[in-house]
Length: 243
Ligand SMILES: CC(C)(COP(=O)(O)OP(=O)(O)OC[C@H]1O[C@@H](n2cnc3c(N)ncnc32)[C@H](O)[C@@H]1OP(=O)(O)O)[C@@H](O)C(=O)NCCC(=O)NCCS
Image (cartoon, rainbow, N blue to C red; front, side, top):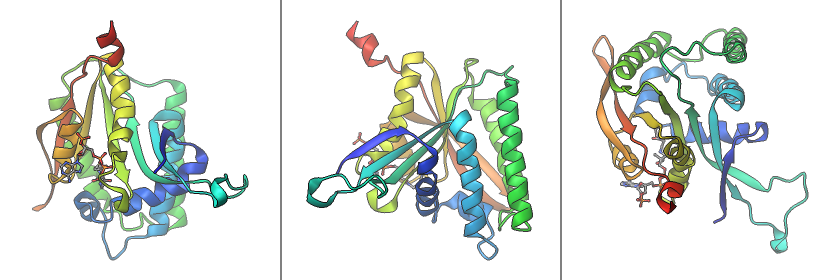
């Protein structure tokens, strides 16, 4: 199996959408924040694509690409796909508390809002997204980060890691996380993530240097979704060790 991990490009976006949708199909947060009866996969596809377009300029979005074996061991013609996306990680760079953002980043945020608004108009709604629950999560997340983000230099925030269900346990998730934690180690910056599954994800992230710091409870009148907050301290980077 030949897998390469690199920054996401526009061409990767359809594969990224597929990967996220497949990996999160049974995810507890996903099931809490979407109404299964009204869920529109088509609208969800466009919404994730909008987020990916934003991520190209504003986030650290990585993909794991698996090379598709070619006939006679040769690469296919340029027009045929030579790889498929088997994993994705979506990270946000660290922000300091006084961060107000550059004009460019504010423009990009505005562009994302406009794209999402157009998507809502096109689909005459949020495609099953329970908007009030989304805001319950955002509010709980703000409280959690105020509590757990103690480092004024900010945190690399891992928003999403997803590996195609058939490809779990082969080291792909690890590489999609390490590509940013290695950078964080070099810069001496901490990392943060929220997992909606205790099992097996907390153990998996512990293997990658994260430790559980507390729960994040999203409570919609007694209908709960619990997320597990984890942080990671920087380790001495390999280049430091060599010196
Ligand atoms: C979480 C997820 C990204 C992990 O990716 P993965 O490719 O399966 O994980 P890896 O194979 O790279 O394993 C990473 C480490 O965890 C360990 N690990 C993997 N599966 C494990 C399990 N079920 N129990 C305990 N440890 C496990 C591996 O041994 C490895 O540690 P090591 O290198 O020290 O041996 C993947 O399972 C996934 O996409 N899940 C669905 C979506 C999701 O829940 N995403 C996270 C929320 S944002």
